[in-house]
Each structure stands twice: as C-alpha cells, then as structure tokens.
Image: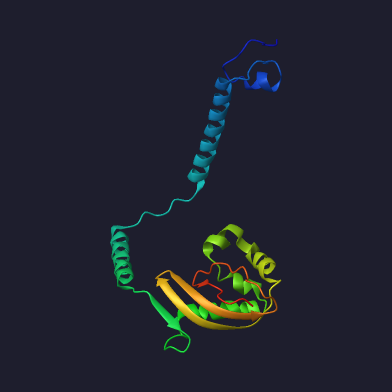
Length: 190
C-alpha cells in the first residue's frame, strides 16, 4: 500500500522501501535530524559510561593542589621579562638556548624526528607519530650548513623569541614551526 498524501511522521520503513512518497517537508526533516542527534547523544553517553571513573580526590589532595597553584601564581607574578644576548652571562645555559641549539643542530644533521620533539603539543597532538614526516617534508628542501644564536627575548614566562642567524644553501626564509620552549624568528635569511 503506497501512501501519496503528505506525512508528518518519520515512517522509516515506508520511506526506505518507497511506500511513503510525500515525506519531503520541514517537519519530517526536523524529526529525522532530531533522531540523528539522539543517536549521537546515546553513543556519547555509552562511551562515557564505559570509560573508567577517575578516583575522587581527597580533601588533602585538593588542599595540596590549592597550595601548589598559589605558589605557581606567586612565581608568575614575580617573573619579569628579560633579553639575553650572545656573550652575556647565562646565555649558553639558558633553557631557551639549549632548546634552540638542539633544534638547530638536529636540523643541521637532518634529524627530523628530534626536531619534531621540540614542536608545540598543539601541533604534535593533531598529527601524532606522523610529525617527523611532516617536519621532513617542510625542511628537506632547506639545507642548514651552520648557525649562530644571537639573542633571546623572554617576553612572558611561557614565550621566548630566539634570534638565530642560519646559513644554508637557499637564500630564503624557512617555515619554522612553533617550539614549546622557544619561538624561532629568522631575522636574516640564508
């Protein structure tokens, strides 16, 4: 039996098998979308229910976390921006120098896996284990023969801009990824 008059209910079997023909209206479309959202909500709830429950923190752990957060806040409030230049005391032991030097040494030796370890977690979490391949694709065309690190500008507690002076085979700027420990900024081309 074929139904040709307009319907306002979601007759799934009738629509699927061609016995309900006049279902093309906003009411049926809305009900179909609502069912899809309901299925998605059900699947999400089922996934959450199957996930292991994290143990509740004890009051002692909560107070300890509050104290640690307070210590961190005081350290951030006491932190002041600073600039380090080549030749100044503490330049070569600064964490940004170590990170930048390791990154550029890895580039010079074409160790793209090591380079990818210095990239921001926002980038690497999206690409996972494919990051070394992506870094290889971005950097393989650029040969780094030597470099010099000129300065670091610690603008905030979480951001440090480095000023390297790379020398290589191409006279162009290189697409440097954002590092967790320092942001590389090329001021001189190859």
